[in-house]
Length: 202
Image 1 (tube, rainbow, N blue to C red):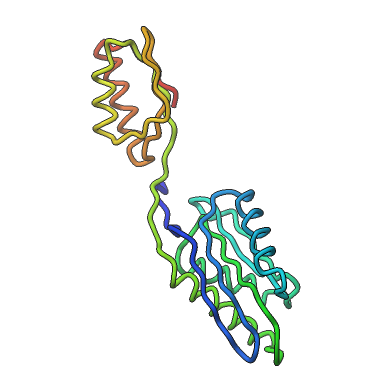
Image 2 (image 1 turned 90 degrees about the horizontal axis):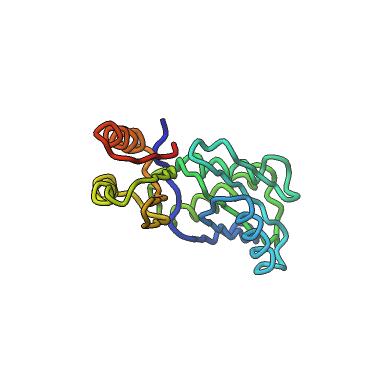
């Protein structure tokens, strides 16, 4: 079971030049395709006079959602080498764009592959990586008299409270680390068995 993944903590960039062409590598943390569309649109505005905007992205803890785009360069000469650098660093939830300004000699397919790989590699080398733990939502309903036990549960398992309602019938919505989810459910079941009136949504 995958309980965590490696991603980038913030934006980063690089500049790679070869034979008159300039390759600007840009790295962004992303989590949705909508974020990716916004980032691409902004980059095209910021570098409106560039010739190519090639990119690759990977989303999700299992890294199954990915895409490459050569943006007019020869097939597999840009997007694939960019993606290769993302995979070499074992990253996900990341978008890497390499903006190209073409002025000078043609590089050929092999030269393009090397240039896009180098720009992406340098931009990722300039990035700060972080490990994110996967979380799941848990919803707990309980009587007010059980509040102290629920508060201890929050502290013991470092639950991140999203919303909490105190009434005669209380409600807690929280994020639990995936690695702790089974233990939290076991603790809640134990509380039920020892007489606490509560209910939780798995």
